[in-house]
Image (cartoon, rainbow, N blue to C red; front, side, top):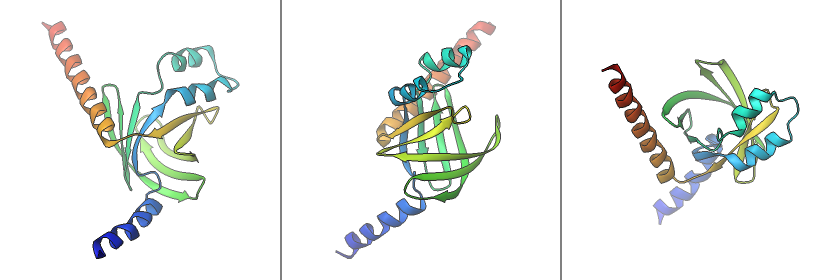
Length: 156
């Protein structure tokens, strides 16, 4: 009985200190709906984002790092939680491409969103199970291995 009570006490504490902790996947449908309402997107941006770009990014968010999986790319990034409330979470991290990044995630029902292209539209992420995330990692590693094999074949 004590262990059950202990578990119930810890669950809210963990979710408060790690508000986005869990497994997430980009939601293509919700993101494209947001993009349709965006103003000022260029033709190249529309072409890139409209052609099966969203819906492929998987995230595993922990208290101080997140793991990103996108096709043949897997990356672990440490982050700092700047602030949070019931509506949004602000984090800061370093990206090789963008440098120091501060992002605001808006909580929307079971999902959350992040601004794209200086907040012209939102990319949505919705919760998934651990097994879905692990399958994405396995698929990513298989794809990367296949590409490396093809590159070796081309060198011969």
